[in-house]
Amino acid sequence: MISLNDIKELSVSNPAKIIFFIMDGLGGLPHPETGKTELETARTPNLDRLAKHGSCGLSTPVSPGITPGSAPSHLGLFGYDPITYSIGRGVLEAVGINFDLKPGDVAARGNFCQVDDRGLIADRRAGRLSTEKNMELTGKMREIKLPGVELFVLPVKEHRFVVVFRGPGLGAEINDTDPQHEGLPPRDPVAVASSSEKTANLAKDFVSQAGRILAPYSPANMVLLRGFSELPHFPSMQDIFKIKPAVVALYPMYKGLAKLIGMTELACKDNIKDEIRAVKDNYSKHDFFFIHFKDTDEAGEDGDFDRKVKKIELADSLIPQILDLKPDVLVVTGDHSTPATYKGHSWHPVPFLLYSSWCRWDNLEKFGERTCLRGSLGIFSSLNAMPEAMAHAGKFARYGA
Picture 1 (tube, one colour):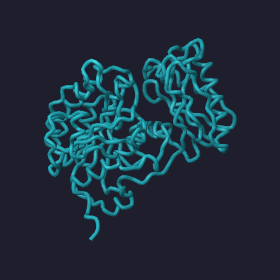
Picture 2 (cartoon, one colour):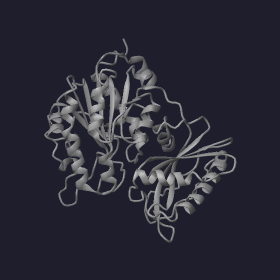
Picture 3 (cartoon, one colour):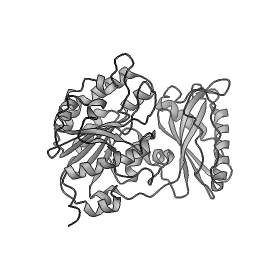
Picture 4 (tube, helix red, strand yellow):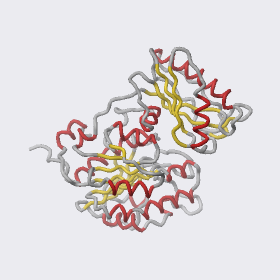
């Protein structure tokens, strides 16, 4: 695999425009009654036309058989090896809400959750708590005091919040308290390195106090913590790829990830149509755009096959507006698979479509998992997505003599 240093040497600046339209959790599995995935079931005339005149394949996030989180799967699409450039969810959420994270701070992503009278998790997302209720409850948790550190508890969106520990002698090598399944008790935060013992004890104290405060507020009567992390340093996309990248997303985590690798955040309201409008309004200022569409992933995690189909159809209806911008390269894919029948992220390769004046036509009849398997790109590492887009945009010099 070519290194980022080699890519930096090959990259050239030009006016060509690249758009990555990422439908979060796009990949699916067949419905037991129809044998078709959500994408294969959806009516997608616009994507189908692109599949006929574009190059398609299936991308593998991280490595075959490995189920990825959102951060590593997006990093791979942007050309960053997620094994080398590992990052925790806590930092992403904190940066995504513009919290001024300092070196040495430890951030964790929090979920409000519901536990039953036996202390077992009944709902990991507290019924996808409203953001307004989130703000009320994070306000109550700011009453928590921990010895020797500053504590910040900040709302993010719906059931998500961020907790930041600030003080001397902290480490971030701590296991998640979220077991990722209902019917189990929350785990204790346990340090996996001696340098993180202090933080683990503080996190345990925080969870205990939070549980007492939230006890009357079912279904948000407990918290789960994951992605303990410290601020990393990543090389910038601007420096590596010689581009001016921008992100438009509704969820802070994706904004945070994009900003950590040098993308400019574009302001938008609260739906995918406003995201497209933000790209139009800023089209002259940037030459790379990451448009994030979350709804497909949420429907998959909720096990709602029909809703995921409808969200894919909504995304398809916006393709003409993206094409009206006349991008030199349009990539449509997902970061990972979230099959509704599985109700969570999975390891399955993700449908991938690249449309450009310089691509080979695959002449596929539909954009879907099985048709993409016949595409000219085959099954490939997601790390190849960015080099493919750069090449089709004429942003690479020739390698070697």
